Length: 192
Image (tube, rainbow, N blue to C red):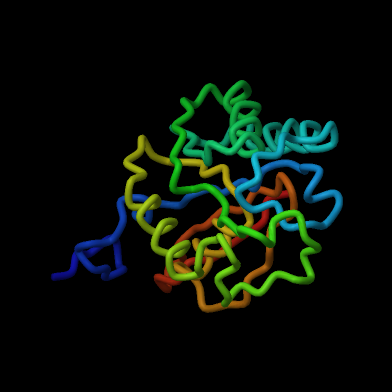
């Protein structure tokens, strides 16, 4: 069964999240980001620069319609989300499924050692991670429009769901807007 949304035909099982544009914000800088090591499920706080980045992102979001902020409960994402909520007044909704991939024994190692298609010792495999992220996105029930505050891995999975274009990893505290065009394809725009 399909449903019609404006001029786009979708499966009836389409996520409520994907019936309108959505905003994604990657958390601010952590020590792992600064050192260019794999952070994964390590619960790093934001650095001073990361807090400044979160405040700058919040300023970019002023005036945009945001009815709720769904975020990873890891400190770096939760703290970034809190900064945005202070400016926008939108309620915060933590969602465990939005957490970054658990890289097991690879966490703390140089990012150049990361192999996305592999399952690291004691870590989460790519299929399990994808299924977890997609299940979390299905839980997002509004109110809409939403802002998702999470991690680069989460951004990668959203990108894979919506686009066949090459993934451009968002920088720390970078805001990305996903909007469906008249041709029914999703377009990703980084907000500056």
